[in-house]
Length: 231
Image (tube, rainbow, N blue to C red):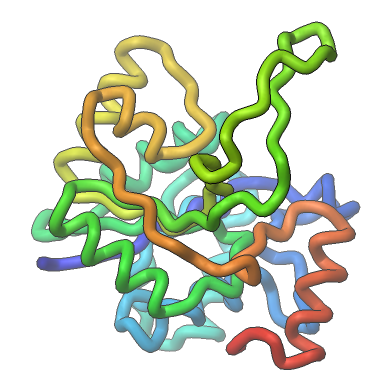
């Protein structure tokens, strides 16, 4: 089945203490977006990626990608107000023959090829999949007033990661339904599940962290310096 990847990269780096788009924040000297796209190079997916970008940074990001990935066919699309809006814009920019799409956070530079391939295989078979890891901590659910409401069985709880991978028709329908019902989700798999579609959990790795805070950046730098990840 024909495949593409979407990289939502429309966010800014305020929580990292940066005034530039998070995609441009350097991690050990290389911008996050370049590191993340490079993870898809061995799979033949980087050069045809669809990347959502923040307004006003089109030329700088285009120049960065041209330098890092010469002769690429990366499609840049404007990001929306929310991540969900950005992904919807990117879905509209996929090639007409694309059957499977992996949606992967720009701030997760250490995803493995094995996890990506496993998510594509599961999505081809089931319709939808998300990379995730089993929870190692006890999870507490609040009642909304700061008091413990319940403690889910840890054996059933997973930490969500990306990519989240789908048959294109399924994820497009999910986004159209969410738009029609004015629902904002925190991830794409949730939109699909709300439509009644099963979502397969594909086991990932704890090194597939999302770089959001200065602490995350320090951890990511340590992963690279200690050769704990392939970069």
